[in-house]
Every structure is written in C-alpha cells, then in structure tokens.
Image 1 (cartoon, rainbow, N blue to C red):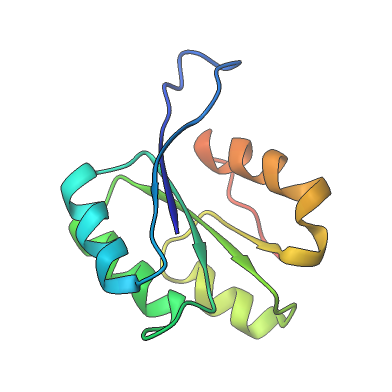
Image 2 (image 1 turned 90 degrees about the horizontal axis):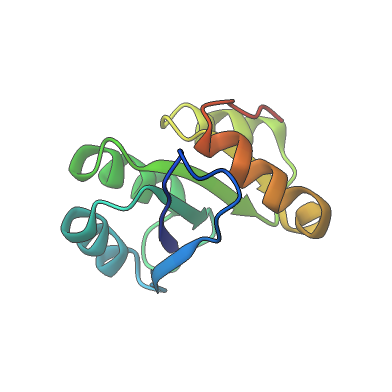
Length: 114
C-alpha cells in the first residue's frame, strides 16, 4: 500500500508519498493516523487480503480514495474490490500505461470499472 497527499486545486502537482506498508495491519493503522488523500492497495497483500484491508481502511479513513493494483484480471474479483468503495482497479500487466491515468481519474472522482 502507498499513501499520498494531493491538493485537487493543483492539477499538475507531483504526488507526495507518505509511506509504503507491506503489512496490512500497519497500513490500516497508518491510514487511520495519516488520513491520506489517496491509497494504492494491492489485492494480494500478505496476512490479510487487500479487499478486507480496503474495508477496514474505509472505516478509519473514509475520505481516502483507494485504487486497487492487482495481478488478477478476474471481473468478479474486480467487482468485489469496487464494492468496498474503491474508485478503481488496475491490472499490474497494464500498469505502465494505465496507472497514472487511473490515479488521476480516481482523485478527481471518476470511478473506473473493469
């Protein structure tokens, strides 16, 4: 998971990373503490699946926007992920072309569907 700060009034700004967390419990704790604007969350996180992590993060930091990054291209998993309130879902194989546009779309409130 990566957490970020972003000012929507500054459309051409760089993202400021507030940290990377490999352990989901740590990620949830950091989301609660930092209340980040944006979170990139891997569905395949260790110890606790990313989908459950997103549910927990939504409860402690409801204004944080979440974008899933995953190696799985299954539309059913994508729908379950989006049902957590995440704004989008990007497959890792497509990340080089799709990640930055997806981040911007989610930040500006345009939900991405698989």
